[in-house]
Length: 638
Image (cartoon, rainbow, N blue to C red):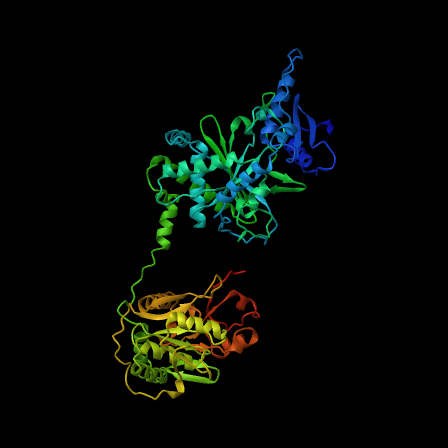
């Protein structure tokens, strides 16, 4: 479609606006041609030629080829002999037809290559699907001396500059995701046949390359492995992408997003001669970003690294989904890539794990953030901190539950009675006692009594199915279980609190020390069977005293003990209050949300509450008497 030429004012922005509008008009793929041309006459005998192709019919290489041919024709006086026609796109595609055996051989290679591939788990600034897709671009350049060093390293390792750049990019992605073997979409020209370099059409191939290397490998070895994997992919590149992806494991690859999870990050290396074509001694300039229909600023992938080889350096850009990443994040990634390349060329014999990707300012910030060491009572057990608090404030209220409240002295007396009873049964250090009780004062007595006997408590939720409870009891090796039900799901003997006789002594001697187990907490089992995590006294004391110091918890504050006792944060909530003289407020099952929870917070003037976002979202506007310290976590915050 050739539009008549237009006359525009002097300002070049008028040409830009025309080009932008011309490019945004949708193509009708049912009707050829998929090419538009417009010639704009500018002031001063200047002209602008605007060409718009649909990507389905051409690629950047083809555009350069066509511009070169157009330039030759523009300069010709008509006497030159016609050049031989290059192979047609149709002929090249026909030559790639495979037999069933050839196709299956390609599938077998890809099946082996992608056997352990996982979707790239990029840390996002915004969740997928929360905002409309939008693309943006961040450009950068590598120093000429670094660019020369990259080429020298490629020669020294007998590989290619692409292998060096791919290793650096994979290293950055490893550090970002924590995944040892990132899968990256490698974009190639797809022109492997003789004469294909002069053909016009869409030849580009996108290949999911699984960059596997050990952290103990040297940089040079990792580059060699990357080179071998890329070469292998190139040998099998003409299998259609859909068939390639079908050979990968499907687990974890389901995505509501349009972008294939194995191709979230991509890499392409272009030559400046093809990436920056010229016509009639004037540069050919791309119109903004990629354009799709009437939507500008789109990104084909979540994160695309484009590197262009120029005369003496590499120029790069990161095309990214602006609905997923902040620009500052992408700028940091570009800086990390530069740091990785510098480290690699300076010391190719170093371990890949030792390659520094963070600039000095970031390393200093990370050191500051991780300078979390604080003094704590590493000679004390957690129940000893409670006992010391009892001596300081024996008559203060330790806990409230519904209409029941108990002082520090009374709570200690009941817990101590249980401790002596358990010691009489042979319970002591590294013996595990299950506690299967609803949240209540009795549950606090059970926890403190088990700890006072020197044993480890194993909190178990009585609402769980009997089979699950029995599994966890057997797995933990429970010696005894404390529960209120008439029948026990556990194989071990049971102890019921009402049967325990009072005792007027301090906690019994048990020889427990801070290295012994304080409690065993079980995971949810969402990825399989529940797993028990062993937590020693020293670790719990460290966490509790750090939180108490940072959050300034203590008497006469009221602390909400919201987490289920079988959930890990319950321990720090519980002892953060009982080791400091604060008042622990226990919600019943009916008080765990909505108006009932708000009434509980107001009734007991709760000062500190740790609530999941889902619970907080279900509350009405918090009243003025809401907790002064609200801790929100445990799941994604909206």
